[in-house]
Length: 112
Image 1 (cartoon, rainbow, N blue to C red):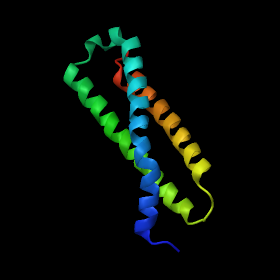
Image 2: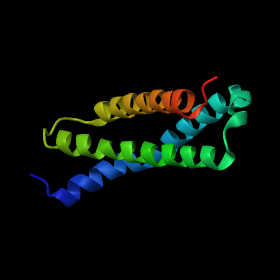
Image 3: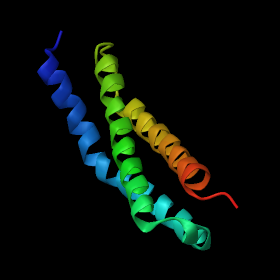
Image 4: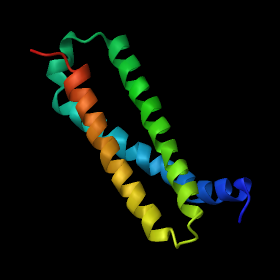
């Protein structure tokens, strides 16, 4: 059995290079949604909007870290992880996009 340090390094070797594309995708979605609904944000204070968006960014990156829990657990099965890791990355990114869209459009955007 591999030691914990090796397992974490192996997980980081896959997940960390993909954190930037993950954040770029989420940022693109949030910018696109905010731009498309910009007129509705007129009544939101800029600092409150900025704080909410920064909080979303922090939460998104905390959620990204949960991939380590799954990856380290799956490494214990000694099965090939390459395809499974990509599937987890895709599913996690899609879920994050849905959650970010929900929070931006339903929780942050003021109701009319």
